[in-house]
Length: 330
Image 1 (cartoon, rainbow, N blue to C red):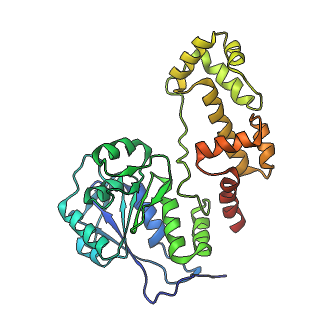
Image 2 (image 1 turned 30 degrees about the vertical axis):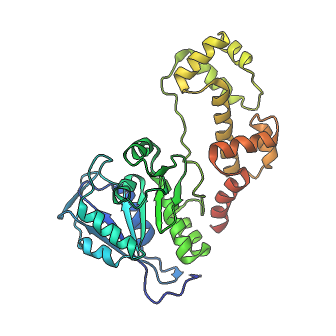
Image 3 (image 1 turned 45 degrees about the vertical axis):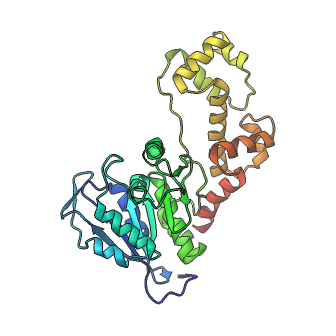
């Protein structure tokens, strides 16, 4: 059964990905998978996908791959959407030719999109000045320092800054943004079908957090058994004194060692672990949200909802819905 698009354009929307020597292959692959792959199961006029570069071919991409690009920057002048799939480095200057072409494209109404560090290319044009933008969390501080006029939001998946400019965080967040664009162009049914091909949730809101798990930066042998015990008993209402007793430490010593190992206080670490566990239950079970809250150690469902929204950026119900939309479509 074919799914029909909501749009009735008489010509395909042209998407053009910018390539360069030292190309980020994963981010580039996202653009190819989303817009270049033929989709005969969809009864719609799919995208016309091209790749353009200012560098001479063959381009050397990450992973020892060489890419021959047929089109130059003049192709961007005809694009409806331009995607910058990562950039060489935040410290690598953007050639003036690329800046000029992007500004001209934007002036004629072209949609400009970045994945991960590709935001540095858009930033160099000045088009993001006084607008909100995001990138991979590891580049957020650098982006803000280099371009203080940009309102950098480091903890979201993607941002529609308005004025036909879109930015996304790293890796899989680029897929989320591409699905968002497909949804804008073709409607929810088409986007859900593409998400099913991706084997991923049909819709994660752009404001949702990047799901950064804070690792134990400096493993501390004295605390390893404590970490394991707490994780196995997240439903228990541990107090700081109880945790200190389990570790055979004073509360002051415990807090010092805990911060050294995790960067968090014991209670904040517990909350993070509980939210992580609750997220897993929301994704994999049909248990009542209030039941999940209590089983993960939150005193009340209201407390759970407060902490979940604070850490994840969306409500537990909306988080679950995003996963079950994908499952229901399969």
